[in-house]
Length: 330
Image (cartoon, rainbow, N blue to C red; front, side, top):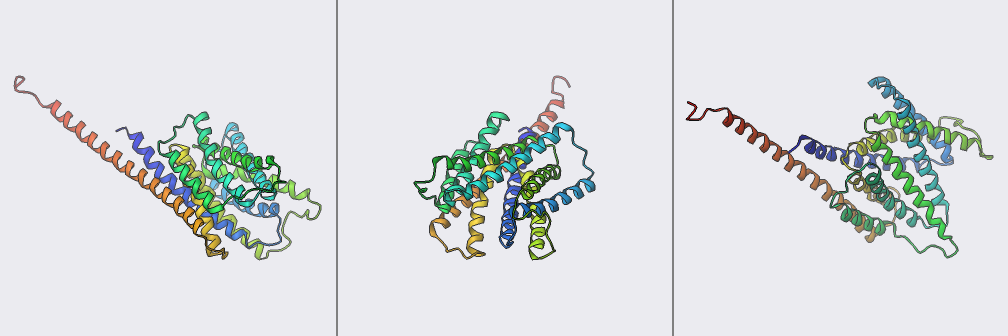
């Protein structure tokens, strides 16, 4: 058994772990941000991304990363642009006439699909045999949790393009992470912060009702956003590390579905949303699908390690037998 095969399977397990950990941390960030009141989204981005940028610079100095070349810098900045495009399309979707459940279902379902298709076409990545079944089960789970509704008849059909565009931009962002596997996650995050800060600063400055860029005082909202920035920094690093580490994007796409049951659990436990049997069934379906995928990867890893050890043992035995003189030679 080739060593690269065993290594890729081991990396898949680590990558899935980092992605699920990132979804836990980012869900915690979303929970913290919900307690921030009377702040524009752009001003929240300025605080959060400034904290993230400072932490990335600190890690760069501590680990003494190499200065990336112009090509890498340009690709990192493009990744940041995809991130801002994802945010803008998502906000536009949430403000449109589409029901919230439709927006979430479209984004969460099609973003992994776009990512796997793009990775197959542009990077030549294989699609695992079990992925279509896992994708279908997770998509059903999303529908059970978010319960898309029939849109308002007066809502233009073109409104559905907004969440689809958000899903596509999110897929491009994660695809860029896979195409920059050699770049340390803090470097990627730092360029992401630069683009986000430029966008938030320009957008906030253009607002006629509130053009101030910085908070007037260090209050509860500011401290919550600093905490969100620190937690989000760890979450984004784990997210990038996960997408960079897995052998194919399809494996990461299934693990990312963990955000859906996590979000539902927080809504019920923290924000007192009424418990719903269908939503619970959807969350259970997604969790069980991820558990099955993880167990399958671990089993494959164990099998490959065992096969590799047996191959090495057979090689040693053949070497010993080949080195012993036979009777005629003696």
